[in-house]
Image (cartoon, rainbow, N blue to C red; front, side, top):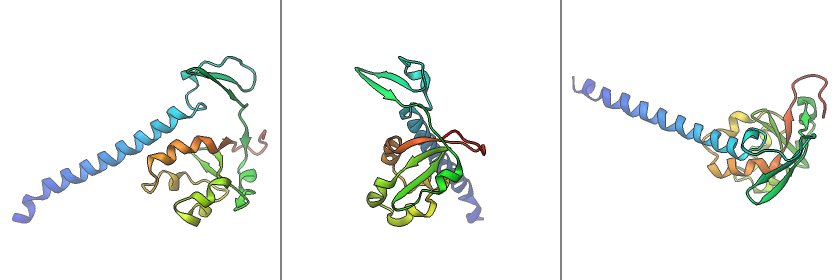
Length: 149
């Protein structure tokens, strides 16, 4: 009988734990989207409309290269310490220069040249990693066979 008395508290605790984790995940996703020009083009108006463009951010003008697309076949060719590309949220990142700084050591090599979205969004990555990611961005994933990269 006493065992059942604590059940509502356990259920409440589990619900709160789930809610907190989901809230944290959404916060990370929103923070990444806010920092990535490709996801939020409406925040900054382009000064040119050809291919890439220049965007005014505060007092600075930042040049944006035209979007590049890579097929999974192209990405998988970069699965070594000499050239390491990852796919995260359908975006391609060249993290070759980050391998030696990765706190998880060789764990980054597990998904080399492949989709590592699930591993990237795990609890092991602090918010700082989400802030660093845009500097490694090189293009978008193109699932079509032709590709234009």
